[in-house]
Length: 222
Ligand SMILES: [Zn+2]
View 1 (cartoon, rainbow, N blue to C red):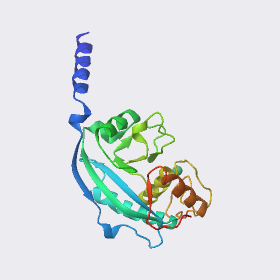
View 2: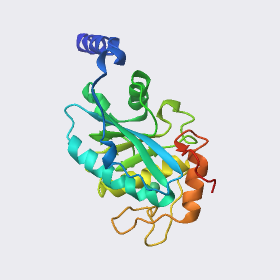
View 3: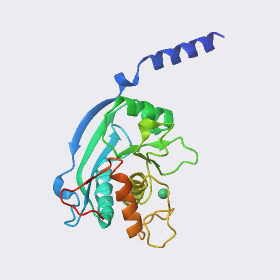
View 4: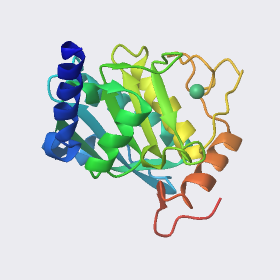
């Protein structure tokens, strides 16, 4: 009886401190502009956020390198990258493990431009995907998570996974392709990097009104 009482008391105290007091952005920086893909023929621009955690197993240098390898895969759709902002968060351990309620709590406490990539130590999702992308249309019950992507530590073929999940979010759909060389095969791999014209048109056409891509000044409509 007594033991149970103390356990309940502990839970009460540990939830008394709100996330607002516990989550802090300890570093914000922009990746160097000259490292971002800027194809001359681009019609649209993407601004991307990356969030990682102080003390995580992820190495920031690995995240940055994988992101810089991923972004050129979007250039085939006429998408240039205008900015990538990296934030390092200091937060209690629970925030480094993805679950919908905890992720929602985190997103209520920090301001981050979308689309945003989050690099967590693991996921509580079942099945435990390497990466989980939440678009606008599948965020109705979890609006804070719209246009975010969550990568669990150890996600394989990371640059291809980042590009693949970004296409899901920008296109706001979960569509896959069976074509051998297509980036949107259900399993990502370094040999599958292509996007078809139809995939590009759909992605630009959906992402622009959703505010995830900006049309470049003077770019022709296509
Ligand atoms: Zn997919």
